[in-house]
Image (cartoon, rainbow, N blue to C red):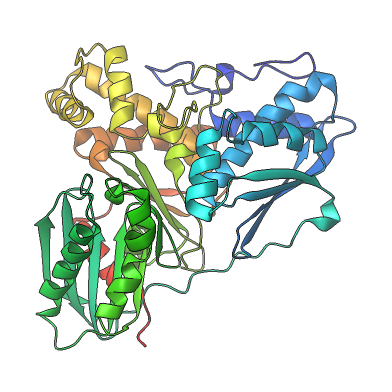
Length: 468
């Protein structure tokens, strides 16, 4: 993309070109060029955005932007829309107010509507998570609410007899923990995705809790994690329950953890997204804070522990956050958007790059394609290496992009895509990008050790609630 008033905003922004994806336009480089140009342009303006939730949580963001002029219209919209998209999936909210750019507020209101290009976001974030579609309106700067982003006082409570669990798509993991030491753990196979009966889910989770409790003299607290969005222990959106009807979801699933808490005599009971617990486990194992955890698996999952060691009430659904700004970037078929993280840092990303590397997998499922690429990498196949090099280069730029929105001192890397020799290549290429392009960044890329992988998640989950 280019305009008469600005330099070219295209792949020339990337000094380190992804070998299989040379058209990649790093979001971080695009945004920084835009802000530099705005800073050098007469008449540039301050623009502020508030993202608000029904419970009173408020997030704020502001930036210098180019003037409201015809020659800047397209590039201004691109900048603010991509930033808003990132903020919606990083932090979350369904009432958006924009000060300083009324013409963009009107356009974004159409884009993020039930019939707009971002109808998926309007419905998923707005209706499913926060109970009402996204609304976007222009406002005066003085009318924007102050930030109200409270930390969640969860985690690092190791005293007493606790149960920690993690709900996955193929198994339920559960552990009994006494004063921070795991005394029992197990995985129970289940198949939750297409179960329509809410009792299947309720009784399955309850059964795992009972199995763990049998190894404790008492139960002081229960903590859990699962993929999905959880707000105040309520299930707002989670693929585990996709088979349950909307009526039964509202009646039985939304408050399922409240029901379980009642069964366990009201002991402190906390459930959060599994990415948050992964980041917390990494933080506890490293003895470090400011940890962003990114798992490259079926999708791209993320979690965050801030510089003070706290979990914050953010969504951190980076699979839907844009990292590539080219006009014809890879399309996410679910959300209908282009250039989002899931197309780069997941099994899906491997499958997208495989034919570009010369593999012919046809309709083979993504997990099987990943296994084939991993086997090829182990056998020294240069085609596989190029896939991992491409992921690593794109990831290096994306880590720098994430650092514009998060305080990051440690980035925890997990997931099936990063296992084996390919994971080493991803890290090496990402570190090369960070070193060459962003020498001012001081971010350590870390792979968790086997003990953290084996028991860290359970201990971190069990530590979520404070004892009553």
